[in-house]
Amino acid sequence: MQDNPFASMLEIVKAAVQEQIVPAFRIGEVISTSPLKIDVAGTPQDRDTLQKNAKVESLSAGDRVLLACLDGDQRFIVLCKVVDV
Image 1 (tube, rainbow, N blue to C red):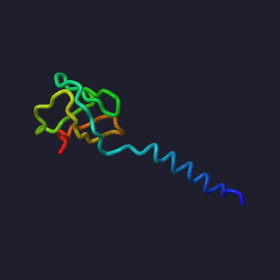
Image 2: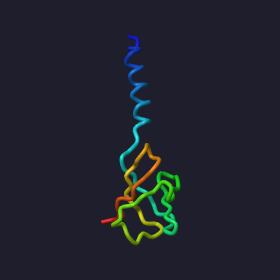
Image 3: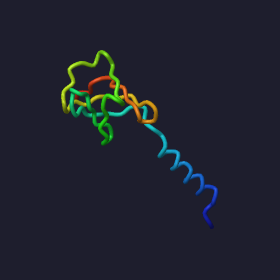
Image 4: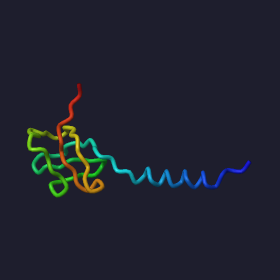
């Protein structure tokens, strides 16, 4: 029995759509604090692409932070510092 060509096409379309889904949140790592620079998914982000919650204080290089993604991963808001339990 031959594969259903429509089922195969549907799988290709589903895979393409999955690649385009941008996560709502990401974990980043602080590279430097002055000026603020954060590594997000292997890409350094700086003050041009970052905003932060006013309550987020005293970040240090190496800290992990939770970021909200905006504009398809073009801008980020630092929501909070993430620590191990």
